[in-house]
Length: 505
Picture (cartoon, rainbow, N blue to C red):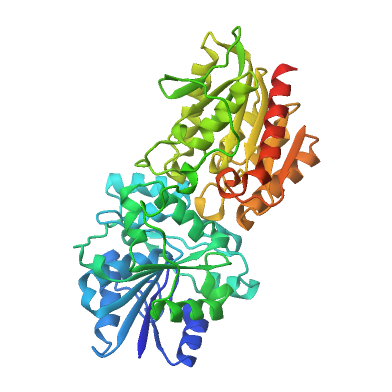
């Protein structure tokens, strides 16, 4: 018989698992939600004893040790709960048949759970406290709509959200600030990742990250690792407990989608050819930018292509050498403009501030080049780089003649912790004035990103922005290299010629 040991996330107790546990039991398994010290009424904290991450690891170890050795243990960690679950699995690796990461990050040895806190402002505040040695106290739990700062509450019934708030407990700060210590034994334990797409993560996205070649992610493509998706927010035990129970049972049986290891496909999506035949134009590398300069008398207008992300820091080749971006730059050159690619520092969702600075620096460098007309510049953004449009929409300079975007993310996704940041194009577009906007919209975009695009389009229409929509009805996110060229060529050419026309007007 399989025994599921289920570890709750931040602020929560065993109550969140009740419905899922009941369904697992009905299916013939055992289910044991873990009461974490200080977070569950069943295990109150002793005021004379410090409650930290090690305390919660001990709580999980006690649950593991209570199971007979003839049972297969599937250890499930949700949200913060993956940290004590992983710590316990590392110390009882021989007892754990499978470790399930339920809509959470990938904790690393020596890194505290604070690194996974989605609220960037709160994370910075707690980091400052930790540096000062001020690690005692508790974090007040959220209530009502405040839960969204910790993950999408999509599809959670109002009554369940009310109960979540009513039963929430303060989180001891030391549980978030104490580094996780791992021996490495847990590396042998089979793993399943359950991704909640409503919270901004999908299996395809993880595959793309693996394809980038970052060595820290290659383990995700090992045969012992499987993945499932749930089309819901961050709290599947509240929004779809039956679906979650089914996925956990399938995970225990070893099912799940496997990722393609790096090197087994000679052409990962981001390295496939550009769908248009464009003339060869020599690259001129100037610091962080590459310029593709057309023949003819300078100065020429320029189109600066800003890649998406996050792209792992170890990805090789870097984005400015990807065939898609090089193809766009050469296409711009074929149309008479200087095409520009660049690398910026969007390696994590916490890096938007730094990436925005990189893009601004690149724009200054391009405008100062004598071959470029500094008063005729277009910016073209892709995918996760779409959030970087916010600064240019909010205060468009006179020399910015057009802003374009391909399958962009135009509002922060729920698990990015950027809700209150300036990187919110759907809000900034109201200040765009007469800036021409060209938006390539993928008809088969992922629902979470499509929602941000629609919010942007609605906001643009409401404020009378000069928005041109170029639809690719059967296009996916990254359609240039994923979809048949005959379906994408007309849209690419139309969009490019629209941008060039705005540069020449």
